[in-house]
Length: 234
Image (cartoon, rainbow, N blue to C red; front, top):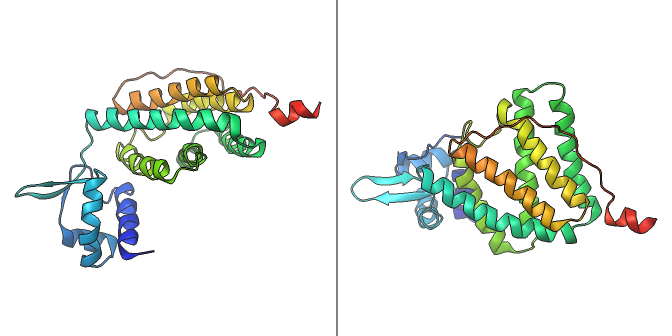
């Protein structure tokens, strides 16, 4: 990996760890200290960060980490919905049965733990399962440009931190139900139903990010629908 790629990865890690805050002003020297990368790599990194919209240069003030506002929330989620609807429509019809079941099993492990009580460790596991689920959908398209675009947008989504987008005790159960609806549609190989369920899920996440409360209490049961191979076996 080239130094500028290492610098980008290190910057991303510091950003998601909240060592860098949205709206914070930062100097090249501070980025050197935070990332552990040489000044030359940081100077090569800055144009990429500007192009990705992760920093902006303010005349006479310096570099500023992208600020989180309603425009960022709307734009980031609009792009996410567009990309993921295409991805899940493709995944529902072309993914192997074992790929769908792997996602379902990861989800069901979280559900089983949630029924015993919600802890910080569970919330972190559920968040990791959620992000991995959506990354899998995008990567299934086999399009490196879309995957790269999605990853940059995902960083912006994750900047909308704390209780607004990250799962919390109040939002976990509805989010799990939404994922259950998506998985049931995938098991049924019903692309239209999967797209609709995904859009509901992402709309809920967007509403949380914008401060819109739309939490409802629902069952966690996931209907088991026979997969295509199971039907063919009969």
